[in-house]
Amino acid sequence: MSIRTSAAHLSRQIQPRPALRLAPRLISPYGVQKSPMATVAPPVTQDSTSKKGPTAMVFLNMGGPSSTDEVGDFLSRLFADADLIPLGRLQSYLGPLISRRRTPKIQQQYAAIGGGSPIRKWSEYQCTEMCKILDKISPETAPHRPYVAFRYADPLTEHMYEQLLKDGFGGGNGGRAVAFTQYPQYSCSTTGSSLNELWKWRNRLESKKSTGETHPSGAITWSVIDRWPTHPGLIEAFARNIEAKLAEYPEERRKDVVLLFSAHSLPMSVVNRGDPYPAEVAATVYAVMQRLKFSNPYRLCWQSQVGPSAWLGAQTSDTVRSYVERGQTDLVLVPIAFTSDHIETLYEIDKEVMHEDAKGHPGVKRAESLNGNPVFIQALADIAHAHLQSGDSCSRQMGLRCQGCKSERCLEQKKFFAGEQAKILPTVR
Ligand code: FES
Image 1 (cartoon, rainbow, N blue to C red):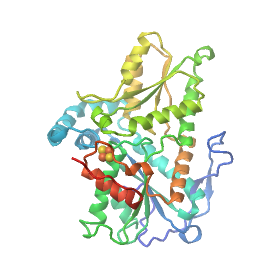
Image 2: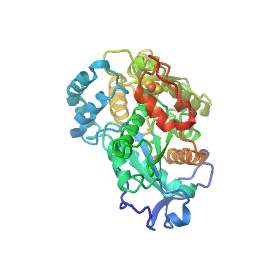
Image 3: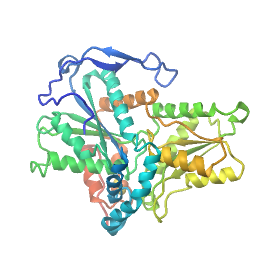
Image 4: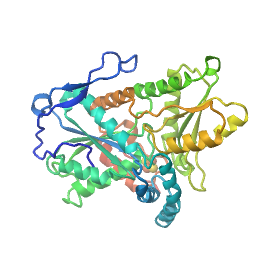
């Protein structure tokens, strides 16, 4: 579903209109930076500023229920996704069973954080603000149109795609769209799953089922920003949030505070298949520590395991309990794999870990999530700008399948998005 408020533009003519835009940066974006100021910018017209625009910028993420009423549907989509939670041949039986059982408990958790997930609010804000910056720094691909596509909650991928078509992208009109994953570190469970879904709806709405052709003329030209685990702007934004939290400790204790980076875990079956996520999360952590000049001791731990199968550890909650029991009661938890607040930060870390596992220990704190951080939003714009200029359809890494991948869906999706750029290895049984 589009997050635009302007009317559809089937003719592809962008009407001149005043818009709120960010003032250009005066200093290096990742050095000392003045906060961007909202200014009224001159209207953008396709003819005067664009050679290749408009460009649809589509943020991909898992999403979350905006209200407790949406929790059931959210969980049933989540547990139906074999890319995220592989349940084997029993997926269609176990998925609905687990989601129904978990719904009341998860509804309570969302009620406890204000009645819903803020991920839609933040995603729409981040994408809109990024597009405003892109209009300034990449006029040849302007105007940039913000869209959000969630995997398990509204706005779902199919609704976003229908809105793209209504807005005059594809459907015979051509045009360009960039799928920009909001998972900085690539996993086949997360970004891979979102791309599988996007590829599925692209086929349903723009080819094969709708026209009988695989590549009909006038379809949307897609490219993908599939990972950005060590981008300097991302690292700078994380580092500043950590520094702000460390500053809350008395100076004599500050250097001994342990930094606990926490990322969503993966089933070991996915890790052992060769998923790149653990290595990319570790790369983010190491880059942040380099930026901090290794000022503090640190560990990476993993949260949000579900079900009885083996998951990647050590678990975040166990880690906090273990350190606190042994007298290390100054800890800063750092969510390192999500770019905005969600149930795993607001409930799992803030309520379960900090107020239950670390009860009575005010030295256990959490660094802010990136949310509306202007350094982070500038980084998003810089990543997108570099991608738009590169002419690449995706990273070199995306074409390579996991060592243990047997999914035909993965194979076809990668053939579509990586195209001629990559040699895609076939499935071996
Ligand atoms: Fe990783 Fe298919 S599961 S490429």
